[in-house]
Image (cartoon, rainbow, N blue to C red; front, side, top):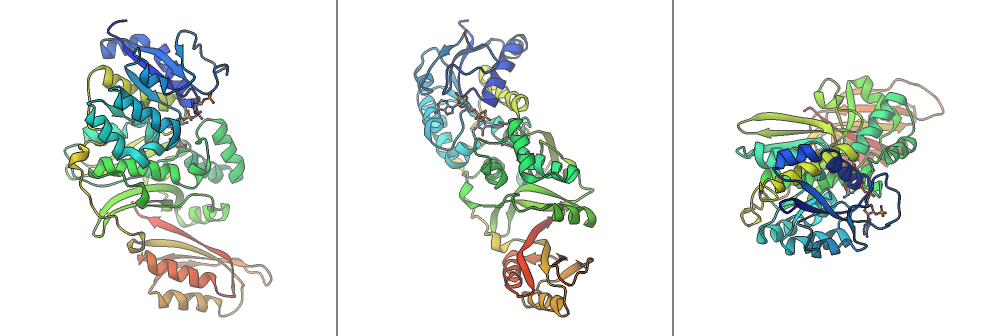
Length: 430
Ligand code: NDP
Ligand code: HSE
């Protein structure tokens, strides 16, 4: 196999095993596409004896994944271990510095160290490919880096976490508990090693930071992503959303605003008849808006062995065919450095829900606080009536500045007649 691309795979979990299966099952197809074989030369994981459902007997085994970077029989290292630091980072740095191409699915690593790693890759004339890191099987990295490369991009947004979308969809369709549906997503191999990354919005924020760099040609800036997750989305809010003509989705959005680049991840109410409202289950969707192309929409499975392996192997094919792009489309030496926009300056409409004592004057108190912050109400809903139990008051606001809205919600939360924490969900008319 003198002309083969010799691959070393670190990490043999959901994604690693998916990649081994695809490479072995599709050898002939891949040889035709690349004009040479994609050969798994060596592998590494924590436990050598674990039954992974695939035969690894033909590959060299390294107990230490870093040995893949030093193995002269490995041309390209695939990092599928995960984690923003530790062994994954050490392996990628070492492989790039050794002049080996790297393919990774590790969005946490790229969100935190993407710019520095791209600099090492560019300095060593090797590829750093990471299609699988954002939106699983959807080829959005390639789309932004290559297909849409001629366009100034104004906005990129989407559903970037399969676990959250699976949870929100299943809760809406079946009324099942949050915890129960999360456990199912973990069993299906969708969730991160620490599922808090999924449900607290961090994983989507990692992916968004990468997309922002690709879209706007700037350093990866995870630190300026406003992040909220789905832990507090209740069955009651999902019901109200349906009634008001919305669906609740965890959206990740990056745009150029008058204040700079705004990056945010949080639950949103989107119009029920907008296409993204119907992207359900483990599916992800990304919308990119370019000056010449207009709006482009990408949809597909965002997690799981098959879709993720599909993206990893596409990256391998690029290397095998000698196609190399700067990791973020623009060389790090030509990155722009736009200001981050503060979330406090964000403008939008809001869904608010307060649990209140049902007695005269309560609505007037709420309205007074909103008036003081110049928040204008578009509609209001209070149906049930009970002398003893708190009743929900639901409001939809007109366009409001985020800092005014937050102050108003805090003040209302402190009123004697209001019980528990108010709920605030931003409304996006996409
Ligand atoms: P898993 O937890 O299923 O697999 C991780 C693998 O890494 C395991 O084989 C484990 O070994 C190995 N590993 C962990 N620590 C070490 C170490 N110190 N040294 C050597 N090997 C180690 O993760 P996934 O396959 O789900 O995810 C892998 C990467 O892909 C992550 O970056 C994740 O964010 C990303 N990703 C995952 C997707 C998914 O749907 N699951 C989708 C897109 C990206 P062992 O098996 O012996 O314990
Ligand atoms: N945990 C991630 C998700 C995997 O649920 O989307 C894909 O990156």
